[in-house]
Length: 179
Image 1 (tube, helix red, strand yellow):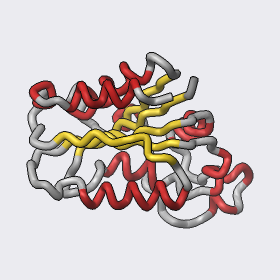
Image 2: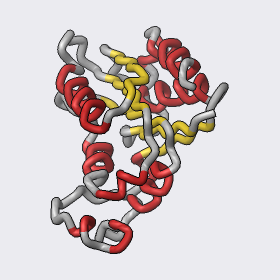
Image 3: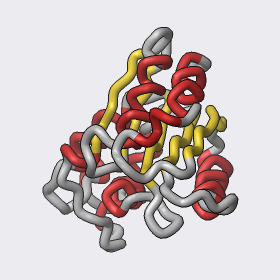
Image 4: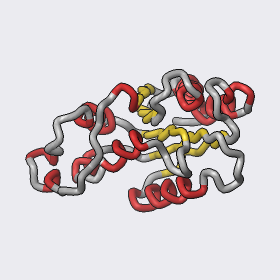
């Protein structure tokens, strides 16, 4: 049984990204311990690139915000799932702030082996997710992580639109496949 941490990057509670992440979590919880972390619940400042975490005791960031709680959760995760709405061909700013704060030697203590990606976008362009998928692939390669899979939902703008797609079932099945 693995510990799965899902980073939910939407500030809109109950929106399409939340629904997609919850569907994945429902499937994954059949064989794993699952924790959802919503960026809407954590005030995390962006990384300023000062690199003080490389010299501070415990590699702690000097910023006193909720990122320390997220570090604690990620430290025990086996699998991380990144779930985000797509804004201007990128993940949400709040989720990006959390990911950027992983620029710390502390991440070497993490036992994460797999990464999955859940994305929701209003546009229907075929290349809508390409830039995020490229970053995802680079992260997989750099950290030697296994790709646990992706669910990409296009054409979902208004709250609940995702219910009219097959994405929720795909996310549930992907979650179910996680071991």
